[in-house]
Length: 140
Image 1: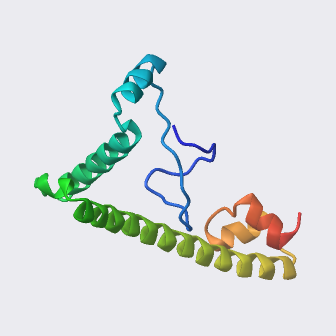
Image 2 (image 1 turned 60 degrees about the vertical axis):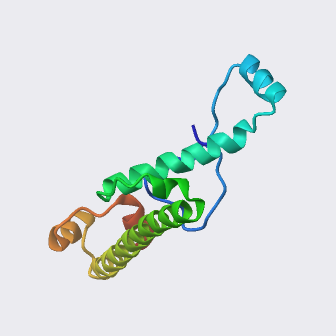
């Protein structure tokens, strides 16, 4: 479960890096025992989560060299590369959406100037305009 309640598509990082928290429910008695034994369980959970993530990334790339995941510097580099790939893809999709909205805005504005209905404008454009874009540029 993520720390905040905002929903984002899987694999799509935010445009700016934020710290989010992984919350895990553990019986209190286990935490008491871990504290009593001096086990740094928060650090262990984080490291193992990073190792798991690194292993999955490498497996998807076709690499089965798990020793890499033991090396913190290489592990963090692999995770950062995967994050950057996802971030770049997300930015490309955002730019594509923006460009499409710009094209629609020009068509909508021209249709309004020509006195055309929404249906006529959509027929000429070849697809339905999302309501928020029509209202933004076409009025009612």
